[in-house]
Amino acid sequence: MNQLIANINQLKKSDIKIQIDKKLEEFQKLKKRSNKEWFSELCFCLLTANTSAEMGIRVQKQLGYKGFTEYKDEAELIQRLKNVKSRFYNRRGHFIHEANKHKDIKSILKKQKDMREWLVENIKGLSYKESSHFLRNIGFFDYAILDKHILRTLEENKLIPKIPDSMNKKNYLLFEKILARLSKRLNLSQGELDLYLWYLKTGKILK
Image (cartoon, one colour):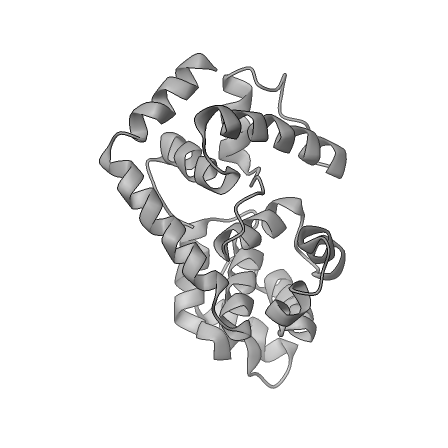
């Protein structure tokens, strides 16, 4: 773990910090924007589960908000996703179609005591990971995004004994506490730490 901390502290002194700070500013700006922009980001997170952020970004740009919300029926939405070469377009199309029941997502979440729990319970296709991803991308930085890259980093640095076969709520919250302690040592929010860890593992800064 000491080497991991040293690596992140080194990045904090480099140009990577400038790029990460810029990305965090983008997330903070989205926090103040409209229902439609929050819903577009929700669709992005539904698209990226078990695929890649690059693909989600591409599809989100190609379809835009109207592509996710203005369609005749679920079949038309699925065809749109297929046309832009989104992976798992049938399943993702169903999830986005169902999420349209809550497309005034910003107004809904502002009323919730626990936004992540509401998302997990009410948005089909969002686990704790995807819900945390969505919340980070709209400017809430107190959640861990436990994707495969982060889990491998935790395992390689002996912060967890092994990656579990299934990520249930108990495991997720336990590992999130481990990352929270690491965040505190580095004087970073969980949202910031995720970007540093992701960069160390992939060499990329996405969203």
